[in-house]
Image 1 (cartoon, rainbow, N blue to C red):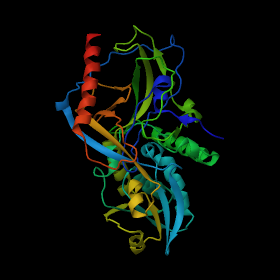
Image 2: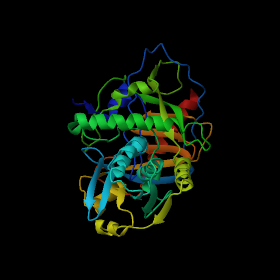
Image 3: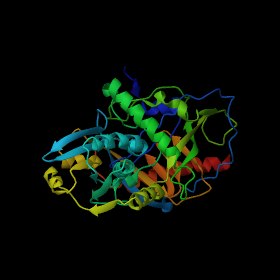
Image 4: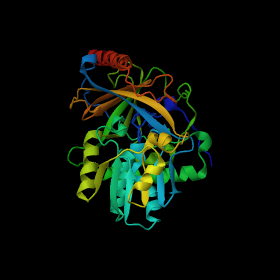
Length: 396
């Protein structure tokens, strides 16, 4: 079985959704393709949409991530290292936050096979924290060793949307085994995310968004320059969330002829990371600040089983050059509680998080680019594009 190539712009013209960015372990990104819309006459009326105050002086943060992409998909397997067993758990591309719970269960299964009671987790990002919690729930005692912890870890730079097949693997590597593993992780993760709805701090919530286009939906585009063809896997689970809706002209306030409403899950990463750490520590977990330069240094740990959740860091630590960085930059604007909708227009994507309105665009040369230096001009240009959309929205 092979899955047709994922087309980044096909989502905008055919499905509607938002781009998600993130960081070392989970730097999401690539459009979350939500599937074809229903009959244009069958849509829910739009509520009043509060304009976003899009100005460069309202940018409160600009961050850059390096998504850890592997053409063959995440590495989840065990390796002997001297007298230790290392369970590798990294390389999720832009799918880290989204797949974290289902992926963690697979990694913990490998750890349980070593039949030890205490384990170590290396890394304190999205994958490391969920691996640690999943291990605790399986009855293991866990210590996390990491150079950084939230908010310093790169996972905190994610856009924060459900994007489970974002740069998961290439179309050429979408083997039956890879597809089956992805579907298991995606379904398990989505179920876990549902249990986080309605909690204090709103770590996760469902939000509507609007894909805008100057051309009819349904055309085909291509990958960003220099990027491979990715596997489009979402059709396998597309029935698990609301379908998109085409909004006819005259029924929306946007200055474009074609609008498609989508519903997406948004992760409020600041609140969510704090929740993960609190849950881990309440269950007896311990986080120790430590940096590892070589695999041999892991042998000094007291635990015999180690889950390696270092994300892009695995490239340097284990010399795994199959991990390719894919740069992504986001800006956050001052939060506006009244703005409860996302936007997607070409390569401009907006996500209404509680800790700030995320504004993101793509840039040529992101694939294979490990430079994490923010480019303020890029973000200011994106905010200016958003400002022009908002000016037209006010006039409508």
